[in-house]
Length: 65
Picture 1 (cartoon, one colour):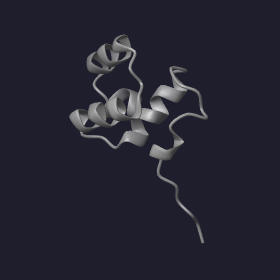
Picture 2 (cartoon, one colour):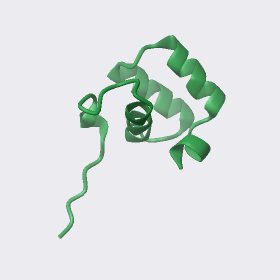
Picture 3 (cartoon, rainbow, N blue to C red):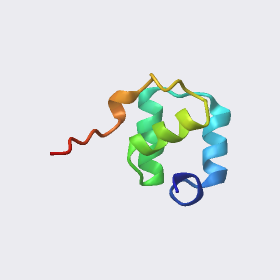
Picture 4 (tube, one colour):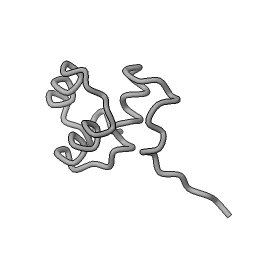
């Protein structure tokens, strides 16, 4: 869903080309795209630009009762 609708593909490609996947830059790019940082982190992890063990502090965790 995020790949097709939430993140503009051409802007994502430019972001990837920059190669800066720091927490600051992820937050900045997410704000520009009007998405939450965890969406971008998930996409970067799925696309293998960062490890699944990286930047998980930006993800939202839910606890089910």
